[in-house]
Image 1: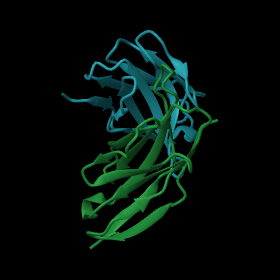
Image 2: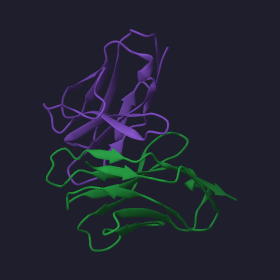
Image 3: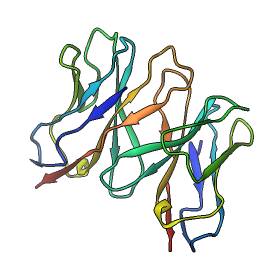
Image 4: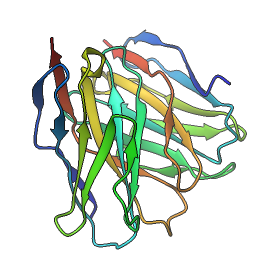
Length: 117
Length: 111
């Protein structure tokens, strides 16, 4: 069965520093997708970045990058130059195989990031 | 474009009351989803609709029903609310191989 694990319930980072949020996953299928979402205190879920299992390069989106280590089944989110507005809950999620018709996601339990001035 | 909209934003129910949460999307996505979010448990899938005319159970479907009214709208119904259904409910939509986009959520309290 597919599973997503986020082992860091909470983290602190100083403003302008980089931070890595951990995510490990478990699947027996070679075809899958990994996502990161941000949930600020206002409650909405914001899509940040996506990595496909066959993608040759690590995904990047502005200050967000995904450190994808397939052999270790990890997909860590790296936020560079942290800003106060990055304080939020961050969720890692995995999509069932591409062959599936539903695009369902399973989510980790999240990491609460606090950026300190 | 409004993206994904949900109504209501907040609701308080008494045990045994019924209600319907409404969701609509204007992105022409085929698939729509209902999740619930509880503290320490992330988001869990209640029901989903892969395409208009189809619905399927997710991880935690008990106590809920859904209707895919048309391509845009997907509603979630609680027939007899229970305190265990106190949660934040999110609707989302997507097409294959793209991210799911979420609505703002509905905070439900069942007393």
